[in-house]
Image (tube, rainbow over all chains, first blue to last red; front, side, top):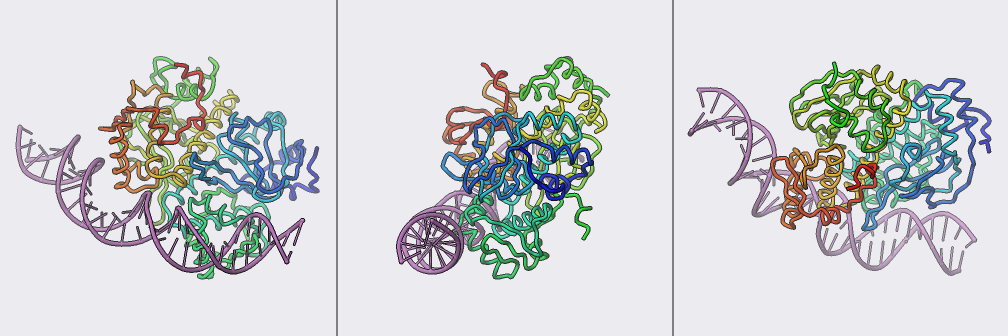
Length: 249
Length: 249
DNA sequence: CGCCTATTTGATCTGATTCAAACAATGTGG
DNA sequence: CCACATTGTTTGAATCAGATCAAATAGGCG
């Protein structure tokens, strides 16, 4: 009933929260002591569905999760890609009925935390309420940025922007190696995230490759020209509200 | 330094919060006692801008406010239309730097509340923290629904959906009269909200009028056929997380 | 090897944009 | 109370970014 993480640094949740705020020793200890049931889940499984009334939160430890909803006409919109350290359904603490679904994109390791445990954690460490509230607000800021992209930017800008965002977020939880981050998504998933068709995503990717901005193969994104990628993506990381002191280098 | 509302029922904030949760007598009293500076603001003025570090929140008392952001290429995306009772920048309690702007669409009456006052309110009434957190999460749910529309629905569905949402939200704060709600927006603003061009919004509106679903003139929306409007808008109000007990009739 | 899923390519079509101009409503100052 | 300016709506025509359809190719894996 405990996650076996050797140290706070290796715990994805602590890493994630420290990328957006400061934690005291006490708070870190309380987070590490949070009781959870760890479970391996294979790819393409729903963890929570629209209409569910969850009694637990899921902390993503390894893998990628999508937050999505489907139109009456069967079209899917992905709202967010979640990475290790995220608690994508933290909102279920405040909102009883899910208005969207969460599903794995890859095999995942997930820690399920009972709401009652979350609540007593927040009761005993009121400042952590602020931290989790803040986290859900940053999620909302990311939604807005995606909305701006979908509503008002062309396909090439959208794709470049998404890649920039994923690099920044994966970097924050220690998953960047050199110019490289894991990004095990399909082109269909990218299309559903950006409001495009798969075919068009494919052609746009070819364009970005042709211009030597990036390589992306077998689930690994290799940024060749970060500067120009951010320019074509009109990317300004301010909306991620990451704490700059952790990125001095 | 107080809003002159004769009773709790007439206070937009209390009305709004009661549409999504229950409030105790104590909490209601504390909300009514919240010190605020009331100000009239004319149309098309920014209240907060991207990059600002607000030290106060604004409670909308009368009028309409848009939450928006502008592309490098000068295209605007509106993320939300805010109605009386909303605190559109409640997020500034947790997030120091604004990543988007808020501007009036009509002449507005706004109550500015110092962050310190909000914080002491939440400290003394911890359950209100949950309420405000919940409110920001419902805002996020609305973002997601707009994103779904912009990314995956056609123009007609988008426009119909937006009108349905606005009716439900305005009804919740007592602004509905018969089949009629105030909706003083321009077609350009609707276009910027839905990721469409003004011309196309205009043609889509004509279609909705031709099919006898609604009238919309001089800032007043008149729903002629609610049932069919919700069908063409694929509208399911679940995502608004309104408390159904206030809508028994 | 053979199956399944993901990527790629080509051809065609269309919903929505853009540009440009007319028209209507509202407000302003003389 | 009217002339004029301003802002919002409507119309028409031309164009395009991206969708759709269909089929071929390439990878990964039991």
